[in-house]
Amino acid sequence: MPERGQRQITDTQFRDATLIWDFHRMGHERRPCSTAIGLGSHDLGVATATADLFWAGLFPVFVFSGGNSPTTRARFPRGEAVHYREHALRRGVPDEAILVETKAANTGQNITFSRRLLAEADIEVESLLLISKPYMERRAYATCRKLWPEVEVVCASEPLGLDDYIKSIGDERLVVDMLVGDLQRVIEYPKLGFAVEQDVPGDVYEAYERLVRAGFDSRLIST
Image: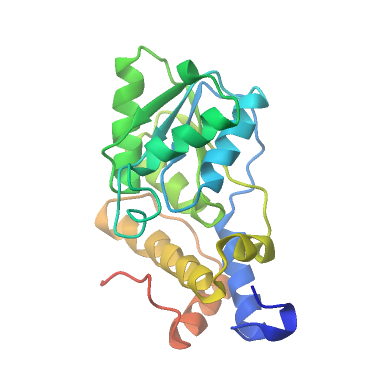
């Protein structure tokens, strides 16, 4: 990972990315919930955060949800949720505390399929700790509020700043692309019925537009 003076992006672009990063983080107070869902992705940090929050006593049982996608198949060939479970077990989480959902291919399916699995296990859910990548908190929240409106949602992720997250991924431009792509989804998905609408502050939207114009567009969807 380059040192600050050797960035792959300019200081202005890093400031814009930080604005978007901070917007994606919901800033929820972590508190005990009925259960949790660890949302599958390329980032094993989600499994780490889930295990840590379990050991903090915030929920007695939880779901790891996720099959495979083109961006995770090489990293997690047996499926995201399966690898997450194995990681949590290595961190001492008892197997009986983990439910595994292996079919979901997007965030909506993560929520829908996990909800079904929890119902089949006779687990009553009044509150839900939704654990994701740091820059996915807001999109996960908006999706859950759309698909499971009656449950109280608390969002959480690894407690990392943007610099540390970039170091954990090892690719600065890719991380900015992902931040931009997730913000586009926060903006566009309510129009498609996938999520509730979120108010995007003007400075965040302007930062997004500047980064798109600068070519940070590999994770954008067609609209």
